[in-house]
Length: 258
Image 1 (tube, helix red, strand yellow):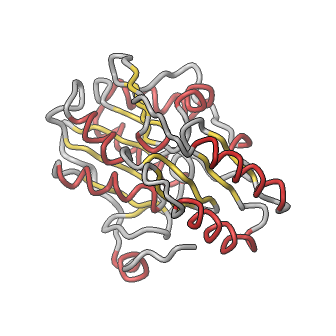
Image 2: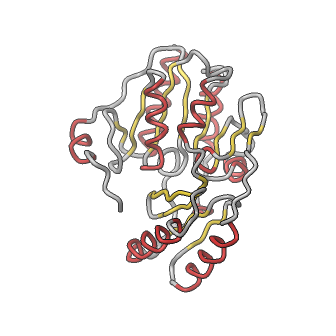
């Protein structure tokens, strides 16, 4: 995996997050934060207790809760049905705000067809790789064949470097993605913070991976609180995993309703 500078030292110094001052708003990563990882992206399951917790949190913060994820919005809605929360999908490339308005920029990527063909051929040629086609982005998962990590990283880096300036490489937990360069989790959070009901609130963003660091930077710009999950990324406050995230969110809910 890609090393994150300062991870080890900051992991040692991290402490459990305190309850933020009200009024607060929540931005939550999904995989690795709310949900434990599964062998494949479509194998994860959302239990009824998590759906109920998110519903109650949304009410407690007057709707100022959004999911910020690499998954497409359509997948998020299917996972958390019947909830339809504000959400940023494909790492901020698409977004649905609290009023239900959907934002997805026109993207005419001349490299899309080339990338799709190359990545499809690569996934077929190496056992244990899973290609996730998100329409405007691609994720190549190697969780079932971790020995292919270096091969995947090098091959995808080479693809992006062959004259595709509209795309960038994004490394995550047993996955490497190629995505449009203009949008990330930072741009999504900044957009939410300019809108009701998020505007003027103290933002909290909980995430577990290098893909969440842009979002951490965004909430800091609004004097908010980034909370790291697990040990992959640096953070002054930290929760051990999804179970602890849910417990902390339950505490946040009880403090708000006290």
